[in-house]
Image: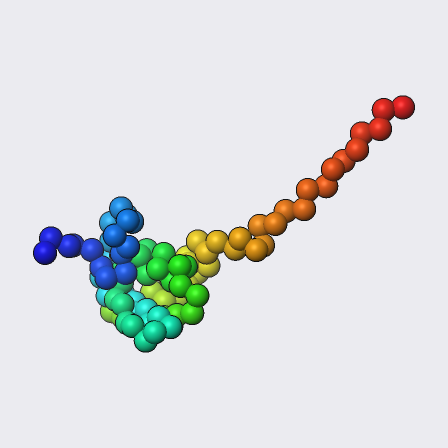
Length: 91
Ligand SMILES: [Zn+2]
């Protein structure tokens, strides 16, 4: 086992861990607990619909993780930009 990343790191995510691997614990909707560093926890959280975030070894990590994940979270239903066609009337 050469895995040197936290549990929250997705296999297809090349980003390395930052900080303790158990900075936070994420509990997903199926009650599966995953320890993660802050960046990976944020990315995992952003991908989950319904997850609990509880502190691990870093007391204020959940706050940062939550904030980061909200910045990451794609809102496809909100990116619906209404294109207004501005008509240039040439007199
Ligand atoms: Zn990590």
